[in-house]
Length: 451
Image 1: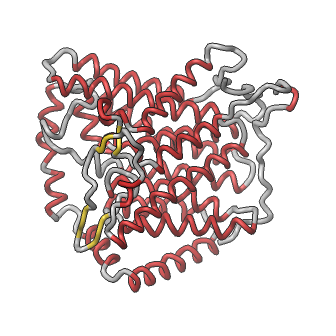
Image 2: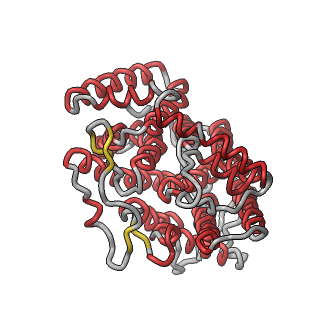
Image 3: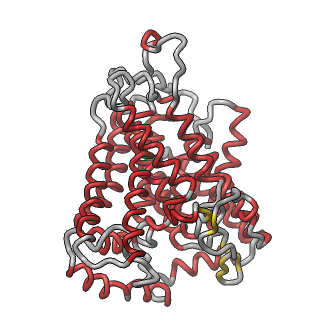
């Protein structure tokens, strides 16, 4: 697959006229700030946190909260406000936050243990960070060039945990213990998981499942960059990143990862030209053969995991949660028992975010979760229809594929309990909102900067 040279790129849509930028005034670029966030998110192991803050104390979550503060302070000035025109992501975030707040109030109406109170409070901090990521991205990216830069940096960032995962898989060495900053506390085990005789790497994520879904969600963005690479010298590097992400994905030995890969193929392949589809199928076949030769048994193990879904012990254990969930939800159907208060050590492990949301935030929270996931898909598809060039249409479809990975993947594990995948998906939602705004409101003059 090579880039289509005949396609003209439309990058100037949404670019502010030169006269609007005050000469000599330092410009604060949201994409640059988001780059720092990506470094913290992907390079620093997620299981290391600031001790007293627990799950909300991961460095990436703390930076995300600062993003929200920055966004809100910027709205106080008409000159620097990022709010310009319609942006559906704002409504999505407000609805999601209100659903969580309603569950927080509902939690106060029942007896709570000290652990549950702390978890509920820290849950609000997490939601604030997720909101900051989505809002800064959706309103802060002011041109197609900057959106492309952010896409490149997301892919580059995700390549790091993929590379770490490969080292873990082949050596069994938990290299992330050497990446933690002094003063952080380890939350979780540094021992690698194993399945069917293979190490299950987590990279810098907290769990192999989380790593696999993150890589599946970023893979479409990596493919877009490699296919439409306009600089020949960079083309090899971009395909190497695709190979890293796609190669590390099955090494997680996770059904969720394989499901995500299947979703990506279902969403992207029908929109590709016939010659692209043929090449993709050939490359996939050759890669499978090479992996079978280099890592005997891995492909068979992964395929077996998928083939026994619904009949193996792992699946039956998960479906066995349904009765307990239904009974608990019927007691608090609308707003649940409180976001982040369903503690596994107190109740039970629920490997399904939809069920977890029903328990913690009720039916209103499940609706908010579906709105969050589906809105990204709808915005990306709307941007695809509005786009004037094929490259932008392809980017929109790739963002839709990323949201589809989450839509299905969230049904296989409690995603909101894992910082990396949640932060990545709110970031991709923000990218969907930014692309929608740039394609549907190209004539609107964006703000000068966030300052």
